[in-house]
Image (tube, rainbow, N blue to C red; front, side, top):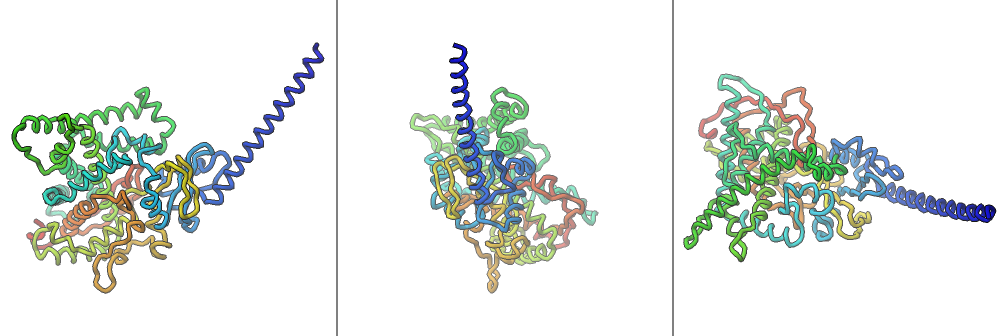
Amino acid sequence: MDAALGALQAVTGGRVWLALQAVAVVVATYVLLDWIKYVRIGTCGRYWPVLGTLPSLAANSTRLAEYAREEFRRQGFPKALCMRASILSPTYIALSTPEDMEYFLKTNFDNYAVSAGTRGDSMTDLFGRGIFNADGDMWFHQRKLASREFNASRFKTFMSQVFGDYAKLLLQRIGEQIPASAKSGVVDIHRWFFVLTLDAFSEIAFGEKIGGMDGHPRPFAASFDAAQQQIYYRASSMQLTWKWLKRFNLGSEREMRAHIKLIDDFVYSLIDTLIARKQSQLGSSWTEGDDLLSRMIPLAEKEDGSYDRVLIRDMLLNLVIAGRDTTAANMSWLAYELSMDPVAQEKIYDEVVSACHGEAVTFDNVANCHYLQAAISEAQRLHPSVPMDPKVALGKDRLPNGVVVAPGDMVILSNYVIGVNPKVWGPDAAAFKPERWLDKEKGTFVKRDQFTFPAFNAGKRLCLGIDMAYLEMRVVIAHLVLNYKWTLVPGQTIVPAQALVLQMQEGLKLELTPRRRPAAAAA
C-alpha cells in the first residue's frame, strides 16, 4: 500500500512539475514577446521585462511632460514613444507628428474617449460630465449649447468689457506695488495672471465677483485650485491609492471632499437663486443677464418644469477651468519669453502704440496687432498650456505610424513634444521666434494647421473659446507692455509645476520699469 501511494505521489508530483515548467515557458515567452514589441516601437527610457518603463517613470514622476520631451529629443523625435508601468498595465502612446494627430483627433475620433480609464475617474468629482470629461451625446449636446453662447454678439460684448476692466485693475494693483517715485519694482506676474483670470472667468460664468484682485478672495477660489491639484496627483502619483483613500475618507481625499463640497455649495446656491427668480416670474418674460449662468437657466429646463442643476454646474465649472488656467499659463510663459527678448518686447510696444493712436487700449484697436499675436502663438508652441492630453482607446486600432493600439491603452496628444519637433518646425524649433508666424512680405499673422499647432486641441474637440482667449491675452499684454518694460529677476528656477496645466512651479518674478508716455494711452 505504501509503495503504491509513493508511486502515485511520484507520478502526480512529476505532472505538477511538468505543468509548472509549461507555465514558466508560456510566461517567459509572453514576457520576451512583450519586450521585443515595445523595444521595436520605442519607449521613454529603458524597457525592462515585466517592469516595463516603471523605473524611468518612477524616477521622473514629478516631471513627466519634461521627461517625455527630453526622451523624444534624445531619440531624434520618432513618430511615437510608449510608456508602460508594468507588463499588466495599459500602454501610454505619445504622438509627435501632425499626421498621427489628425488621425487620432479627427479620422478615428470616436474610438478615443476622455471619460474612461484613469483620466475620467480622477476628474469626475470636479469636472462631472462637463464638456471636457464627456463623450458621445453628452459631449455633443454641451458643445452645441456652448457654441451658441460663445457666438452670441451680446455675450462677446460682455466678455470684452470684463476682460478690459480686469486688465485695468491689474495695472492698478501693480502700481500699488511699485510707487510712482520708484525707478522699478519686482512683481510675481504669474500669480497675478492666475488671480486675474479666475476673477474674470468667474464673473463671466456666474455673474459674481470673487474678490481675488481686491485681495479678499472668496473660499471658492482656494478650493477650486486645491481640487485641481488633487486631480493631478490622482492621475499621476496616486493611481493605486486615491480610490481607497476616498472610500475611507482619509488624507488628501478627505480634504478633496471638503473642497468639492465648498465648490458645489457656491455654484448650486447661485443656480438655485436664479431658478427661484425665474420661477417667480411666471407669466412674465425672463430677464436674461449677460453671464453664462443666467443665459443657461432656460436651456436647462426640463419638460416637467424642473431644471438640470447638475448639467449647469458641470458646464460652468468646465468652462471656468478651461478659460482660466490655460489663459493664465499662456500669458505667464509669454511674459517669460519676452523678459529675455527685449527686441521682441519693443516690437510689441511699437505696434500697440501705433494701433492705439494715443487712445486707451481696447479690443478693437489691438485686434490687428499681428506681431503681438505671433508672439502669443510662439509662446504657446513652446509652452502649451495642456502639455499632454491622454484619451482611452475603446477598440483595437492601428495608428498611421504603425503602432497597434489595444482597448484600454491611452493615446496621448503630446503638444509639449510636437511644438519643439524640428521635423515639424525646422532646425530652430527650440528658439522663441515670433517671426515664424508672419508673412515675410506683408508682415501679417499666418495661422498654422490645427494638427501642426494643437495648442487649443484640434478636430472635433477644437476649443470653442479660442477667440475669447486670444482677445484677453492681447488686451492684458498690451496694457502691460504699454506701461512697463520688464526683465527677468536673476536667480529664479523657471520650471513647470506638477499641475493639470503648464503652470510655473515657483512663479515668475519680473522687474518692471515704468514707461513714460501720454496719459491717454494708459487709461
